[in-house]
Length: 267
Image (cartoon, rainbow, N blue to C red; front, side, top):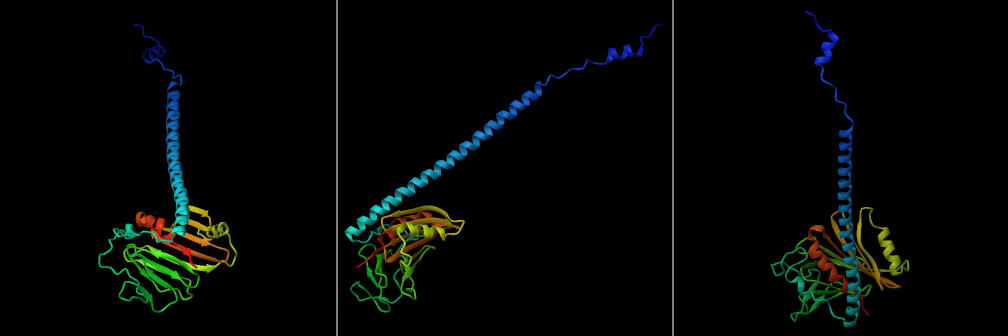
């Protein structure tokens, strides 16, 4: 019996070797390219949406500033306090007025029995507004006035007589007003630039605008929203600042749209 040589036996039992032509690698690369394109497209869509949201907010802020300037001029013409009836239902923090909390000043202002307020201990005058219990604070030193809605506790006037603070009886909102001499002879634009320069580095400014003699600045910093309006003249500056936490944004924004517009020089 004859046997086949060993090398022939190996060749008979060894399966043929399949050579890959690189098709799999090409398919994988194509898949990676498609996935990358989809990822980049998703990022671009997200960025466009965020940019659109910011643009919408900027447009709203600009519109509100223009409206505020118009309201200021109308208020100066009619010389009437702003209607604070909208605050009868909700104070700045969302609490209801008439809930038993004392919203009247406790700083020496008393009633003479006829509903008129008189001062006992300082030179500034406060008068009862005819609308929704709002009170008008008038500063004697710098001759400015502002209407303060009901639901706020009047703090003592500052030692130098330049202004006062008013704290919400419910919530964390605070209204501060003050006056000063325009020692640096700032124009409204220069005053706005100065205010912006003195903000902290993490302040997110949403409004910075000049309208006539008025300066408007609003920003968010460390969870607190601050709204400032200043009336700048050649000799004096009157200012109002409203601060409230972001959790009270809805009611705080409504307050910022009305109360600052009542700030004006008198006499």
